[in-house]
Image (cartoon, rainbow, N blue to C red; front, top):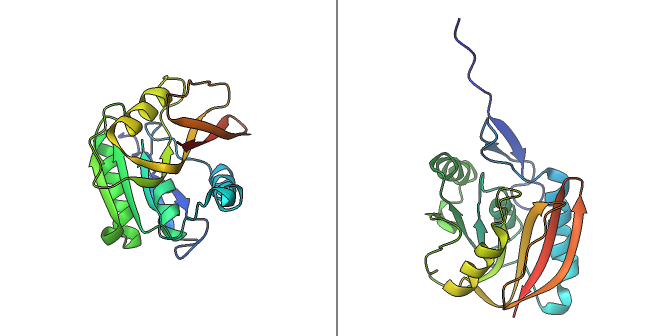
Length: 195
């Protein structure tokens, strides 16, 4: 008797033009999508916690690093971001991101890049917002932040969201300022500003 193939998971877009639309996740543990509650809290914090810094998601350019399913970048596009770049190095994740972009009809506003997050290529232009969701407990946040800065991915004043395990601590490379940190169960989201 052959075992049944693992079922793919589903995530919903929380708000914006694609509110309630579903996107796919991989059936195994290779991609750990940000839970609905944490994703909603993250976007609420972006909408209400950075007004003094002049941040507005509408029309923003976004980079989603260690993108997995692409849920964070796609949520940003749904809420009014103009353009998103999705970066991952795992072939199954890259295929899934492309599938989810096609499901939402976002091909004209999305770019998918295969790259190791610690050694990113140069962007076509600096971004206003970055999402980092590396595998937990691997010590990747600091080198990814350093790579984003070194390659020019972030404009001055850009907002960066870093998702880690709640017990995980990372060093800030030069050029970033800590703005806030929130815990959501086993997940922590740290908000930074690029100087």
